[in-house]
Length: 99
Image 1 (cartoon, rainbow, N blue to C red):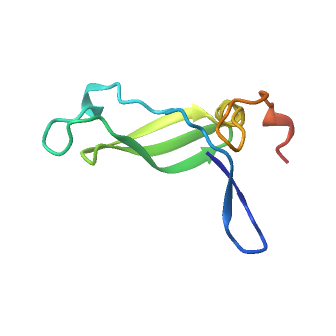
Image 2 (image 1 turned 120 degrees about the vertical axis):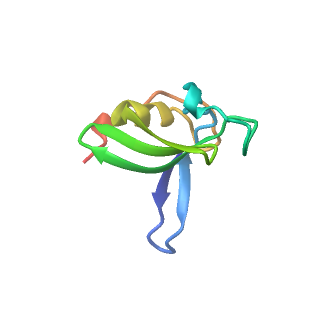
Image 3 (image 1 turned 180 degrees about the vertical axis):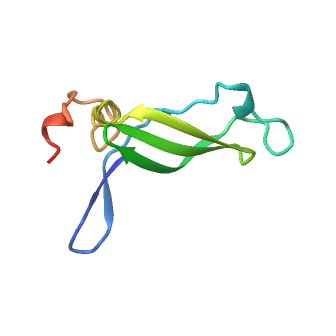
């Protein structure tokens, strides 16, 4: 999802929710071992933007930690396809909007 800050009261507003999962357990070490969870569960924990690439640490069912890398601008363009209700709208190119 993409958020926008509201300067008047400090709250965040979701302007582009993404109803699709973008991260899937595919590697054998990401799959549950049966000790804690039976269902694969991945969740991002942090991210660092390094010029054009977003590097994210993620947890795999509280059993492992991994790193995922993706190009930042294509990811933002993909998520921006969704309007505030989570429906696909026009495909904006946000590369022109960054300042």
